Structures are given as structure tokens and as C-alpha cells.
Length: 114
Length: 112
Image: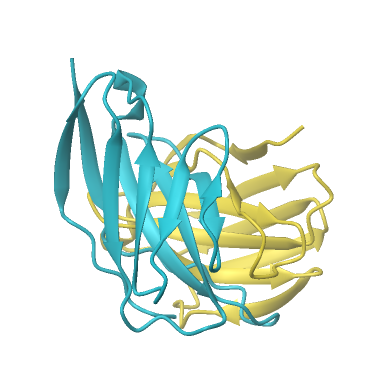
């Protein structure tokens, strides 16, 4: 199984809502990543977890709250988002986070904030 | 991570080899060259990576110049399903810096 599964595939939320994005992998990978991608732009790194600990936060606003409850699961909790946060949110994983490892990406969650 | 420069777009005839160039003139000796592609509405897909030597796998070949300042991704027999945005990325070779930073990429269109 070389899949990274993201749910839901599509999400529409209001600016006062609280929602969560979920990412799961069963490859035994210990590094997991969240990326944000606006239309016609490259993916931008948001967070990196290494061995269930947050290792990189790319100065992401606090309305985005990541969580890694175990080595297979990565969540992104959303609260009080703005319309400009509408984007494709991509999850990825790699074996240990080393430089000679490829990242496996999920298909993403397309988020619309109204 | 070193910056990369790629053409904004390219066309290639179906069945021909697609050669995608990438310039990374500020690359350091310990940085890997990675290629990913993203087909519309999907997550990025790993293609190939290398440090110094040329590499080949079932998808593509990666040719890195001797001075490592540029590289070329070769898709040997392009098909319509190879239409995608191709990203060339250089990645530092230190544990504890797990970033994979995407540049603007090349939009490759395979023409029937």
C-alpha cells in the first residue's frame, strides 16, 4: 500500500466554522507534511511532523492547527478561516524525512471558505 | 534550498522524447535534484532524483551536468497522460531539514 488518503475530498465552510482535514498512511512513514496550493501556483509547505513531533512550522497563522495523534494519522484543524484560505490542501509522507527519500502525496482536500 | 529556473511551458509531440531543462546554478555539493509532476487536480507525483550521477527508472531519465549547475529530465516516449506541470527541486541533504520546496515548474503539453 503506497497510498496517502485524504478526507474529505471537498469541503465548504463558513468563516465561523470549525472543521478538520484528515490524512492517513499505512506505509510506516515517520515524516508527514501539510502543503497548501492556490490555483495555478506551486504547493507551499505549511508544516512538517517528524516522529509525531512538529519539526517545521512555516509561520502559518494560528487559525490552522496541525495534530499528529499517531504515526499513521495527520490532522489539520481549521477555525475562523478567511476566504483567501480557499485552496487545495495536500498531505504527504516520507520514510523518515531524510533528504534521499521521496515524498508520497495524497490527492488533496479542495477547501472553499465562504 | 537552492533556487531553480525552468521554462514556463513546453510542447512535445506524442511518441517523441520530452526533454525538460532545469537550471540550478547555486546548488551546493550536498543538495539533491528532485523531479515531481502534478497532473491537473491531483497531488504531486515523484518521478526521479539524483545527486551527481545520471539516473534512470521506469518513468524517466535524469541527466545532471558535471558541474551540477543544470539538469534535464527525459521522458523517452511521451504519451498524452504525461501532460502535467513538472517541478524541478533541489533539496538539502541534512536530516532535520525536511523541506521540499516547489518552484514554479514547467507546464508540459503533449500534442497528439
